[in-house]
Length: 119
View 1 (cartoon, rainbow, N blue to C red):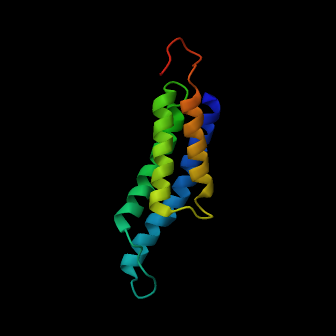
View 2 (view 1 turned 120 degrees about the vertical axis):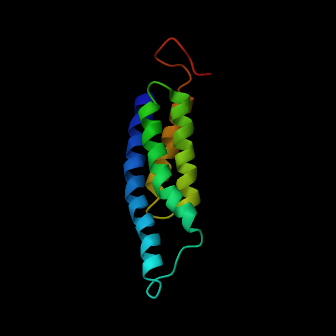
View 3 (view 1 turned 45 degrees about the horizontal axis):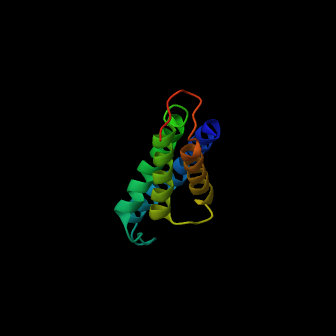
């Protein structure tokens, strides 16, 4: 389960980076070209989600093998951040689902391969 959480977290982070590039870029373009497009309701939330959520997913996925509990918490925080920043749309369904499932799998790995448990 830890390996699955690792893979899902890294994939969620990469997909989240793609969504984040466009989300952050849209807010910058809306500031500079206000005549052509409208700005989002909460610019800072979208920018924070664009940068922080993919980073949390990748870090959580990387931590999933050694520290499954912390990695799972980071991946769940990433899924919540993507949902709060972007909503649940066609473009965010896979990053949110992968980060959420990876987080649940990492937390459910209660009996680790090593001698020490995280519970």
